Length: 491
Ligand SMILES: Cc1ncc(COP(=O)(O)O)c(C=O)c1O
Image: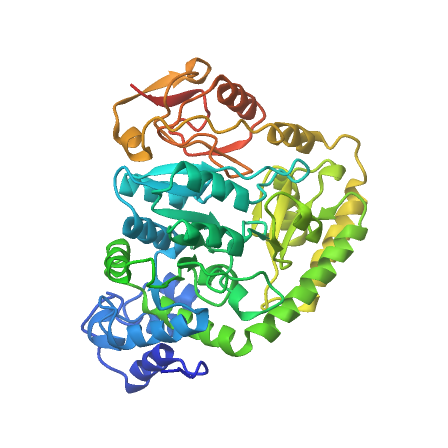
């Protein structure tokens, strides 16, 4: 049956609940706001608290993906072109976990990109599977990961013909898309499921001017963060799959293992509404956003000392597509690191960016932005360029740039991430760690690619890199000792 994408079955049911006006003897304890403390009421407002509905007996028992929720998920399945979708309340993180739990188990091999989000590594720890990495190149100018190439997937598939899945992250944080069709075809030729982390691509399906989405490109499963770039509220995401190579019943079980048993009704409502908005108006809304973002990109390019990443990267390693609505901006030539640029914009111009790294800031342009918002951004950057002027060398940014250009290569996966994570481990001074096996994950930002995962051999190059990184103050996620004076290694 073909659903009318203008309809919003879950949103309508939530509205009905409010209109009828039930007396709630159910969770949450604030009872539609009546018992909420004054500060919370002031911040959220009565409407928001009234909408914080309970699950059982209210809109529907949200612990069961049947009835109404299943209906709303089926609308979404058609909109995103899959056989089945699941509404997620623990972000795409939980979708990645569920996918890996459904596809592999202890000792299995999964082909994964080295630039995957850390939820992928956590999924490997949960499952006990072994990663076989595909390593994307790092762009020396921007210090960001490019993309895995079809050739990388082919090499990995030849090395591990029994792999349980080929997993690709696309688009990246900076909007760089992989050759999904090419990689998917290689995986399928080898009889291996092809799955994608498309957290930064909930919108792709709905506008032909954006990069191809995973399901159109033939993926067996994808996870998208509806809260990142479309109208889902924070933490809401959607997992989608086709049944040909993925066991949907097993995946269903894993989804329920990775979700809260008290899902937030507001998230379901927002996913239902976001799906409708995209399916009905997505193309025109995103065309407007693309136009605004391209306008901003061109203006930034005219400002002295500033640059904005664009389609020129399409020619680079593995980068087959580009999402122009992601703005990666550098002011290195003004001597500003990405962190400094973020701070100046926030403190002096009241502009909040999506993220900063040592070299760049990243901003999202969506259909929620107005032309005056983007003009204000450009005005601030113009002012800032005049204030800071061209500085020779680029200061801190130059140091980070040097460091990023020689990210050490992956060494060897000696133990599975899970075995290493749960093995007896000791903290060793970093300088003495060469030759040991890491018991933790170490991820410098950027490029956000783990330099070490649990179970990997630590090389002298990695030690040298981390010593230099800690001396230059690069942010590092993962290790217990965030100062990087020591690392935990398998005893
Ligand atoms: C590539 C990628 N995958 C997955 C995630 C996790 O998504 P969520 O925040 O929805 O859990 C992120 C978060 O930034 C991400 O960048």
